[in-house]
Length: 291
Ligand SMILES: Nc1ncnc2c1ncn2[C@@H]1O[C@H](COP(=O)(O)OP(=O)(O)O)[C@@H](O)[C@H]1O
Image (cartoon, rainbow, N blue to C red; front, side):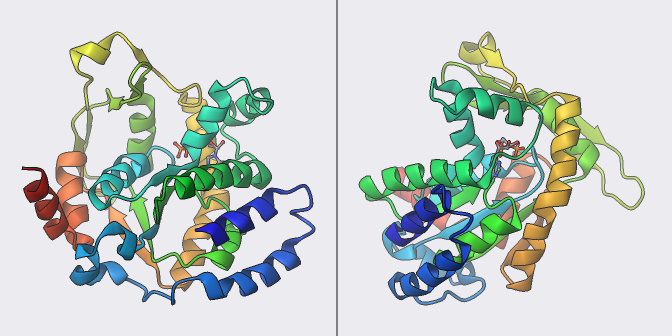
């Protein structure tokens, strides 16, 4: 983890761009600190999953269009496996909500649905990883990062990503889901007011997703993200297809991508995801431990 951090710090330094070649060299020298390369789909080994989180060393990436549900499933898996869920969008929003020097600059970029610079992202990420190291945490489930091939290459230079889960959902549903997203301004819980019920068409399956309504304590405190307007959502989808789709191809070439078509809302999708990840046993073990 320290190696990942040092590299991300180097990438976010003012000389980061010019130091690309140096970064590669650094990555090579840091390689000796890394664990031996994992097989493409280590999660299929149930034994590995039964080991404590420190030994399991989960290094996963969640890809997928804005609003597809990366945060929902990545955070559930992070609780199940006891590894940190690191969402760069959350790091950006924390910075936005602060009085830090970056806040005004970030607001303009994010509210237009554009990507913030790699330098800023590496900076935020390296601060987050430093906290993780101080807390003695290990492993990660990354959500919203990498979003460009450049980010993927830098990450690839320093750490071995075991698996990339690519969540997929039809675009018309994604727009409805983003428009329905709400967060409680007090406790930070996420909800969705959209009731999605679309028929099968043009070879696409029907899909039903019930709304995820807030409990009464949160009802009057719902807020909508400034970048969840239809215009900005469509812009984010366009930018995703242009900048982040190539990241899928980057990892596909490495044989690390698990494609996951969401069959519906959480009640339908979560058990299916656990099944394909071979994690049903883990859920049972956690239940037994907390019973
Ligand atoms: N890896 C990244 N690279 C560049 N910009 C990012 C990255 N992660 C998040 N952002 C910025 O934060 C915004 C919100 O990100 P996120 O919460 O992941 O949104 P989404 O719902 O679009 O997946 C993005 O639109 C972008 O401006």
